Length: 216
Image 1 (cartoon, helix red, strand yellow):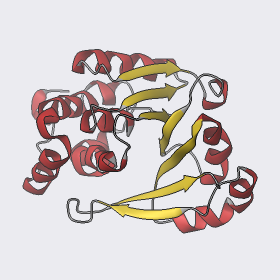
Image 2: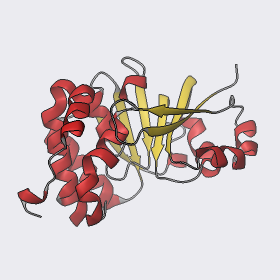
Image 3: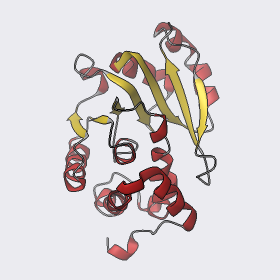
């Protein structure tokens, strides 16, 4: 893919990106270049996603950045193209990120991007979430476009610190997913989930997050 195929952010997206990434904005732009070139050729994203790479993907993820605990740790399950893991690591360089991804070609791509961007706050692990439950313990566990809450909760709760939180990127069906996962929420001894809209003042379409904590 040639350089001219990498989309420039709109004026509104530029404003949002400047707010969310600050001094890291040049690295975020470099990340978008990776997504729109090798990310497509490696099959991590479809070519149709290129025109909306900023708004629909990178900014959609980065808007969670301000919600993360200062100098905390995040485990991103099923990282794929680094969405949300790399986008958040760029937005929050003070936070440590562990990207958990089972597919070798995706892991290789993630590792190369992390090296190119010089992200010292990111490590990439090739594994399934259930295989690292004895190794990973994070303040926050994230997932985006991985699976339904019903399946996600049993996989991710063991990765969460006692005082930690699950923060899942979801769409308009969040409430229905919560209802369908009632048994898993109860079994995992989690508090009632909260649905939060982020970026209403920054993004054309705000990001929907489902947040869950352990019961006290």
